[in-house]
Each structure stands twice: as structure tokens, then as C-alpha cells.
Image (tube, rainbow, N blue to C red; front, top):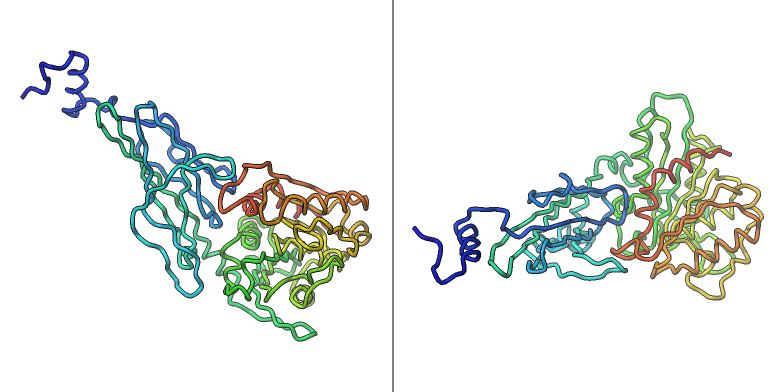
Length: 414
């Protein structure tokens, strides 16, 4: 058998011999680099570490990640690249358990919030949160000179948090003194039943997407974000971080929409639920922590300024004072004096510059109000382009993944 054509120059003939006869992998198209971004910014890495000769990789991401950005680079401008994801990402539904479509889908390169790459979406199907959901991306390279092809695969495995969520127990209902009923889940630490000590308490207020009025079942307060489960995970892993964690669900909103800083019926019910837990359970009243994101960030700020003596620390993400995104909001009706007296130096405010939903001016308003009232606070501002999916409003994914922030909160006591 002869693989060399006499009509080809010698160098091209040699190339054809090696490629056409399958003799030399060095001539196959390769990637020169590959990185991957996840909005948690929590040290995610390819396993094994990238090597052009290795064709198969895995990356693990936490359970509140809805997409990752693949950034592969071909070793030559003569190499074309296509990316295909094995499963079309399922849309979230509370009525259909599984909305995934198991068929290949081409992923086009794009620039998302300043970052360029291939956005590989992960399922938001209701059922996908109860498994170690895996999405496989195939990167196909073709050398336009030789028509040789190479495939790389990346398995993106999202954590299954169902075990920690199960520790929050079944849905419960609490009814306030005024008759407002809210659903909630509550976590108790491993040593709780046998111990005589008291425990810190974390109250976590969710955002607008998890309201009962939006059709969300109460367990999605635990599934779609880690703002409650992250404290339970810390509690399970470290006896020094053991805590009771309360995750209530608002029917509509935590706060009356005005500048006065007034809790709604749901917000008042959540506070009374907290007081009920403090009265009935083995709770350390000097270590009660309040945190919230978006709608829950606003709710947490209003709850803290209404009852500032209750809390040892306040951790806000994508929050606002008054009406969101208003140019005229100044929070003049808020009890800044109470925050100064009880929570000075115990407030952490986090925002992203390019948050499109709760705009950065909301952070600036809170920061200005705190500063004007001589309230010392911690601040973390994520620069534009830090987040890419679903959008920069979801910066709480990284904020709660930041262990140093969680350690800071737990270091505080009244």
C-alpha cells in the first residue's frame, strides 16, 4: 500500500502519510489552553489540569450555578472550533418535574457581561436540583488544511444538595399575631438533641423569585440559592459553626414599598417566627444573624432597623433602602440611629457594579446613608464583568461562597 501521491510535494506527501495513515497524533488539531468560569468564583478548576494531550475533563460547581463559561483556545488559526452541549438546559417549572430535552445543541461563542466564551447552560428543571446534575460539552476541532479532527469533552457536574436540604425537615407553617401565615423550613445542627448548650441562629430572607405568590414551592427557598443551606453546610462540617438556620417563605414581599422602612405582614411574621424559635429552642440570643438577597436584602435591612437590638450582624446582598432603583429614594424614614447603636461595625453590604435589576445606585444610597449616620460597615463591590449568567444581579452566588465573609459574621456577638 502506498499513501504518498507522486503529484504532491515531499513535505505535503509526508504530512498526508502521517495524517491519512493515522501515524502521528502530533498532527491532530489541539487546544492550546482552556479555562472555565463559574459565578461562584470559588476555586473551580478542571480535573485533571489542562494538558493539550488530554481529551477529557471534569469540573465540579456548586448547586446554585445555572451556567458556566467555557474559554477554549485552538493552537492554530487554521483550526476551527465548535461546541455542543449534550442536553438542552431545562426551563424551571413548578408543575413539570423534568423539562430537559436530551438532544445535542450547538453553543455559539458570545460575549456576556464583558466575558467572551461559550456559555454552557445547566438545567433549572425542578428535578435537576435533586441529583448531581451533569452537563457534557464537546469541543470539536477541525484542521482546515488537513481535515483532521479532535474532540475534547468537559463534564460539568453540579452539586447535589438534597442531603443538606433534607436536614431542614418538612415544610412548616407559622401564623403571626395578626393572622398572617408563612411557610418555613428550619435546620438544627448535629449535636442539637444531645447538647445542653445554646446555638447561634441565622435567619435568611429570600429574593423575589422564591415567593409563594410567584408559584414557587417552599423548598425552592433552599434549592435555587445557597443563602440558607451554606450555613447548614458549615454547621455540619465545623462544630464551631453549628447554628440553627431558619428559611421562611414570603407570600408576596417582606417590606411595604415606601421610604419609611416598614415591614409587611409577611416580614412581621418572619420576625415573630424568629422570636418563637428564640423562645422555644436552645438559641443563643447574643448570636442572632440576619441575611438576605435582593428582595430579602431590603427585607433584612428593614427588619434590622426596626428591631436592631435583636441582631449581632447584618449581611446584605443586592439590597436597597426605600423603593428599588428610584432616583429620589433616601431612606429618610429608616431608624439609622438604632442601627448605629446596635449594629455599628456589624453590617456587610455587597453589590455588583453592573447589576441590571437592583442597580448599583441602590448600594450607593445605602452606603451614603450609613456613612452620613457614622455607621461603620463592611463593603464588597464586584467590578463590572465579574459575573456573566444569569446576570450580575446574582452576585450573591459568590458572596455566600466567600468563606471569609461567613467567618466574619460568625465571629460577632452582641
